[in-house]
Image (cartoon, rainbow, N blue to C red; front, top):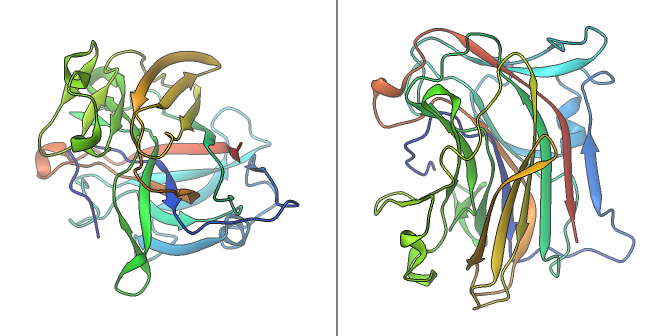
Length: 286
């Protein structure tokens, strides 16, 4: 079940689950630095992937290759075939899967996800893409086709637009936010989709690794005291306060990794076969 988007790349998501629980001895941080010790098949076990959304052939658009900058490091390369733009269209480009590498307790209030993404030289941004540590909320009581969680509201995905401009695109419950949210600087509201936060507040680099950290402070249930902070290469580039993510108690369950050229028609499609590279993953909670 896909949420209709107007983005071109949808990368990472924190999946929220109101049922999560963990004991006192649970790990508070999971990291996966590179693919040096794993094959194209074995790494999924360490990520604890519980559903592969697309492509149907798991190896079609995902390859383990040498780091484009450091030959001694193995990283994940994602392929976007020419003309691909939405996982429901053909050809299918990018990749999407759900993973739960650590068990996050129900009382966790701060979730942090870090990863690195590399765009080759002359990468064509087209109309816009997303490179996101984005989240969605999940109701585990409702199930689609027996295996897919039902997304309620995703906290926010990182995107790029024309010329590599960055933004945070947030899917949060619109009827629960402050009436003044859409009047704030660097906030663009869309009645059909979500909120565009900080468009142009940063730009994605090509021919270099971008280190992204997105920190989500979940709100006190029913109060507008949630926050999201975005760091690029160790510096804060955007922060939004006074958000309401939830009005009942739940926390994060895992990672939704999705990346594709998006949009509702072929005008969003990649004009040529392109690649992105990933490494340096870390998921933690407090």
